[in-house]
Image (cartoon, rainbow over all chains, first blue to last red; front, side, top):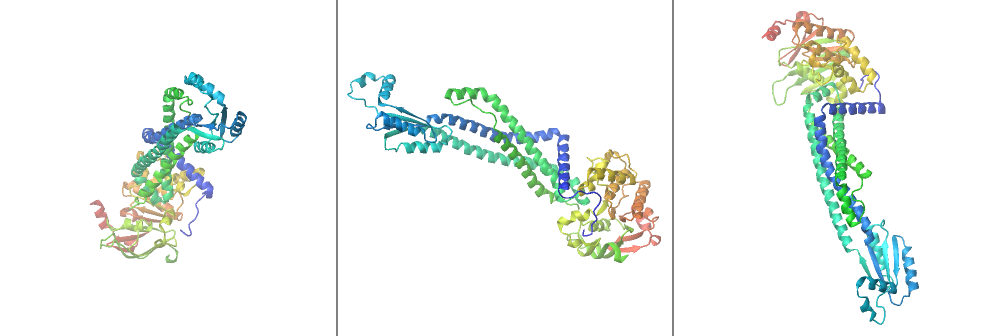
Length: 316
Length: 240
C-alpha cells in the first residue's frame, strides 16, 4: 500500500533479517524438539543414507593411503652397459638420486651383483665355470612415495632411455592393476553417493511435504494475516537444514563406530601386507563434506517441496 | 465522505467460476475513514465474498475496488501480503493456531512485521488488555470459551494498530451476551478512529448501534439507516 504507515519500532535491513532468521531457527528447533522420536527417525534414515558413501569414501581413502605405502614397490632396475666402469656407474646413481621425485638410487656393481646372485640363487658353482662375470651393473631407482603415481611412473620410463642404460625392468604392473581397481571403486562410490543423495532428497522432501500438509490451516491463517511466502517458507527451509545436519552428525557417528569395530582386523590385514595401520581416523575434510552435503541436500529438498506445495495453499 | 473513502467499490460484480449467478451485481459502495458499518443479508447472499474482495482473497469479475488509495486490481501477487498487513481480519471460527498460546497467537502480526521482542511483549499485553484478556497470555486457545477465543482473534486483529477492521460473522459462534461484548469492542475501536466493517446476522445487536447498515440480497447492495431497517425476515431466518 503506497501510503502504508510504519507501525512502531520495526527494525530494518540487516537487523530485521537477523531477527527473522533467529526466530525461524529458534521456532524450528523448538518444533523438532517437541517430537524427538519423529525427528530422530527421519535423521536416522538420512544418517544411514549418508553413512554408506561416507564410509566407502573413508575406506577408499585408507586404501589409497595404503597403496602409497606400496609405492616403494614401484621401482626400476636399470641395467648398465658393460663399457661403463664402477666410477661412472656410481656417478650416474648419485646424479639420479638428486633428481626430484627420487627417494633412492642404489648402485650395484657387477661384482656385488654376482655375489648376491651366488648367495641367493643356488647357482654359484655353475657361475664359477664361466670365464667372466656375465651380470651387468645395476642401478635400482625407487621413487619418492609422496610423488604422484603417474609422475613417478613417467620418470622411471624416462630413465630407462638414458644412453648409459642397456636395458631396464619396471616393477609396476601389479601396482597398476591395483590402481585400476581403486579407480573403479572410486567411480562406484561416486555413483552410489549420487543415488543415495537422491534418496536423501526424497526422504526430506516427503517429510517436509507431510509437515506442510499438517500445517495447512496455519499457512492459510498466516497468508490471510499478511505473511509473505518468504516468511512462511523460512521455517520449512530451516527444518530441512536441521534434518540434513542431524543426519550428517549421525552418519559421522556411524562411520566412526564402524571404524572402531573394524580397526583391529583391518590393522592385522594391513600388517600382513606391510602397508600401514589399516583404517585411519575419519578425516576432517570428509566430516566437513558429509555435513555440507547433508545441509545442502536438506535445504534443497525443503526448498523444492515448499516451492511445489506452498503456491497451492491459498485462503478461499 | 465520498472524497475520503477508505474503501470504495465502483460497479463491482462478482460470480464464482462458470456460475451465471452474480454474488455481487454492479455494486457501488464506500466506507469512510473512521466509519463503522454493518453488512447484512440472508445466508449465501455474498457478505463473506464482499469481505474477501476487500481482503484480496477473491477478485471481482467486473468493476474496481480501491482501498486506502490503492487499486486492488493493480496489486501484484507479491504485493498482496503487504496490503493485507494494513488491516485486521476477524473470523467466525476465530482461526486461532491451536499449538500456540494466546500470547503467541496475538503476536503473529507483529512477528510478520518484524517487531522486536520487547515491542511485541508491550503491544500484545496492551491488545489483550483492550479486549479484557490480561492474564490469559499463557493459556492455550482450546482452554478458552468461545467469547474469549473471539476476543483473542480481535486482539490479534488490532495488535498492529490497523486503520481498518474487517469482521466476518464475528458473533456467529457466540451466545448473545458474548456477542454483545464483541460488538461493543468493535464500537470502542471505532470510537478511537478505526474503520470497521462487520458482516453479521446479529440484527438484534446492530439495531442498537448507531451505524450504517448495508443489505446484500440477490447480488444487490442497498444502504439503509438502522432506524428504517426491518430485520424481521433475517431474525426469522436465523431462528429457523
